[in-house]
Length: 457
Image (cartoon, rainbow, N blue to C red; front, side, top):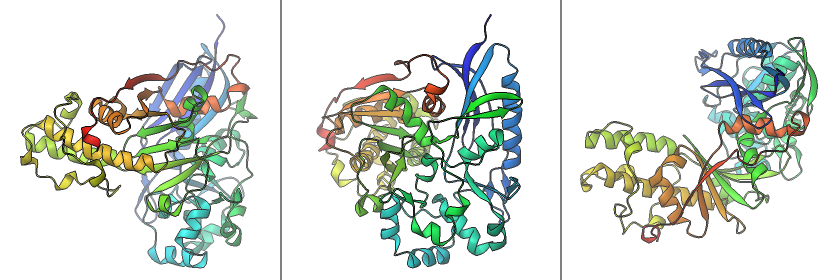
């Protein structure tokens, strides 16, 4: 029997490290995953163990290549962003892979923005809110002024997706989806590295650019395989939707953060958008994607714990709550609640006001959806007719029904793609490994119709 043609995908998350073999119909035919122990950097802050991750990648691909049922035609990678691996002249890893949540010196931040024209100017030019170490270029800037000896020895700084590629290909390269994602590296107005990176010598630490939809021939564990250079995971997760839908849409990807992506809105971000935590991602084809962020998943976790204690229920009791159009507060005014995209305001409500968990939960979700409306509207464009919701809230009937009510002029769908980032990374280099056309059934959709509108006045 002939082996099944596949592409191998490494999908590296903060918590879960995953590997997939995907066939030409975009079905996952083999997988494995791991959770790797973190280590601490020189300041005692938790960070990724690069050595352990590197060993896992080598061991995993070696196992996969020896599976007789499958023939690996190509390989690609997706990984979380805002994380850099530093290589010395010999190509060896030096310094930790610092956690993007590591505190950033307020004094150093002030020095940087004062020198380069202020926060608003730099943010507008780089489409990057001021995020400290989440602006990955600031990690290099910090090293230059706090650990100059280390900075001087850095030959290349690789974003994590490109480092995973480098592990197997030994070719240091840069990808546009990584440098174009709130890094402060890229000037969206001139479509090149920002001048501050040149003045500070940061641009010289970045390897040559390589197209995200192209491949190189690489020797991997003795096999010749076509390899991509990897993509930022948020950009990869958009690709299945862009491959299946041509009419303008917004994708709300829900988890700890709820991120609204509009890949059809290409104009520069405004100061108002940046002040409200909007940013731009660059797609693998180089086109910008406007996005807004909402910390709703984290608040949902916090408030459902509070509800569980008050009503003496299990923490996940909300999963049993079905939407009931009679339970939302008919006097609720969405416009009066979404004043902040950081906290919904429900934390100040007295839970004794509610006769049941179900009533309180419906009210809480009204607050969350009011915030979601405000966040999504920041990147809305007049031509958008559909909203797709994937992730946890896409499975939440209360959230979905309220969202369809607050957007009565849009088609609102719960959407799911199995392992969307991995599928997206495979699709990015489709023409280089797959002999079949892109399948049209990889996205599952469920339409929600607006049930009642009194809650969204």
